Length: 306
Image (cartoon, rainbow, N blue to C red; front, side):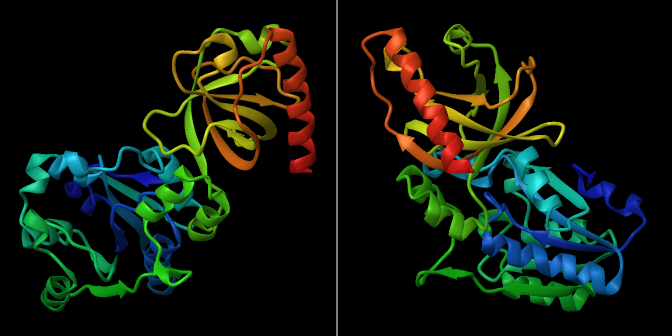
């Protein structure tokens, strides 16, 4: 996938562009409809299908006190997801106070200095200084600058519009089936494997300690998981999410044991998909009792993932 970090880089690509614009946290079914419009336009007319997004999330800059405590994806994870939708170009613009102060018309003028032939957005998308840009402004700009505007209505689920906020709440509450219905896939988080205390190795169940940063996580406990590594290999496993009370853990961790995996992967990236919640996290009277329960959890995870 091509990646451009600045609007000024787009003209050098030498191709007509069909772009979906938005934050796209989670790339849920509503986002996929917008992205699909850009992909279809590129397929029909030729040129590159792209996604223009912002990093960090604009609300973290504009109104940090109102920003969500956790997001659904890292930028790299988002790139993998949109790549699977047929996107060939990702434009993750750095969002800072200067970007927040840019007038909506200036943003569109700078964007369409490149050969942009399609812009796809959600019909309620707002952009530019004080969020003054909207679909009405884009329609006027489309007539002036010669691009096609696709403004997509929200996608609904159980009577309400799908939103990243609604999905975050469902995951927080443990309603992962509901979240999956809105995402169009099971929820997963991506992070770098860090070195831990290696207690799992001592118990006969080595684990990958995945740094999830500020991503939204489901409730604590033991989960059956499917894991994708940086080389595209897939593994089934069992993971513990929580503070590890049996060993007096001090912070919340995601530790995944991958069945049949025995390599060192410190510093590598893993994507962990939460499939089934097996039990709550509890404190065991001894490490031996914990070891026996982990063995039972592994068997339960294998059965649930079969």
